[in-house]
Amino acid sequence: MQAVKPAQPIEKGLAGPGLLAHVITSKYCDHQPLHRQERIIARHGVRLSRKTLCDWVLQSAQVLKPIVDAMRTEVLQSKVIHTDDTPVRVQDKKKNRTTHKAYLWPYLGDAAHPYTVFDYTPTRNREGPETFLKSFRGTPTHPRYIQCDAYRLPARRAAQESPRPSHRLRTQQLGRTHPLQHRRRPRHRQQPRRKNYRVHRTVTQ
Image 1 (cartoon, rainbow, N blue to C red):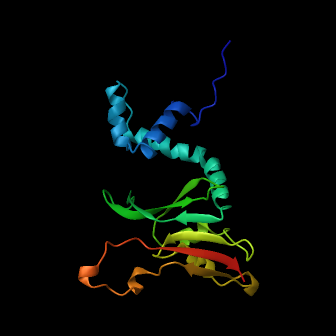
Image 2: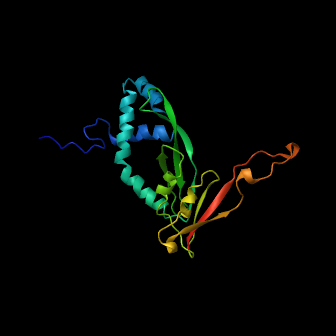
């Protein structure tokens, strides 16, 4: 009599959930890239190629997609969302041994929805934030806010024209303006540059 093999996160894969969780946590939480993990594991007498580790991470992302979608739904229910873009170098599949710049956008929910979701975009165009924040809407009685820096504001998507004027959105910019709009101070009075933030309030007309 033979027992039924337990379900595996990766079909026909040898890695169990514990090993996959260790590789993913080491990479994204402990800042251990896969080439370092490859050498660390080799010191224990186990040979795992970097390609195998990459495949595990990629396939694990597909397994975890329902959890990420649920976290995204929670974040979009926040009253305030914080976001900014972070550039990352990505290997270019069309050109061998070359990379191009892409971007990760973290979206932080408020205290009632304490989740952080990362969204990948190949460019810095506003289409990425527009797609992610498509369902993020406020009302005059329950306004909602986006806090971001002053470069290519994701909240600009709220100013898009809608076929129905009653459904158009407007943004109210609060706080300091773009640094280029400030007068340049005399050299002896200059202070260290500080990052400027804008808070955007989205409401329906």
